[in-house]
Length: 190
Image (cartoon, rainbow, N blue to C red; front, side, top):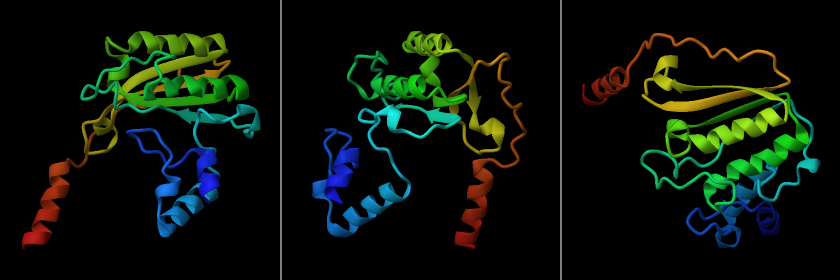
């Protein structure tokens, strides 16, 4: 179990990026092993050989957002930065090798902010050089039925696409978080 998890390079200590498999006690080790085995986790994207992956039509991808979010450290998204953000560029080797028909990327709104937009546009240029038509927008969860103000950048890319992807129109929010919490409050205290 330990060698399997070490080969995948999961689970990681996100402060030191060291594999924690040898530090897990048996019940947790077994759970971690089974979870990764059952979902056929391919593991650390930096270690994946894209030629060993099966073909697929849709590739969803993202990368850790903590460093680019407004509340984060504002690290750069540069390809050779060695930060968690550079994991975005690891996705490119899979995209280039497998050439899925559709791509969907999601991340925090600040990805298109002044400090990071150049690298986002660099990604779009790269995808266009591979033949993808890109459409992106900033969408807010509250505009799609979720009682939370959560803005995210979504990018849909279609290989040899001819037209822009049309993002769904916002819908009226039926419930606000306070409506849900007020019902819970009433059940607890009445």
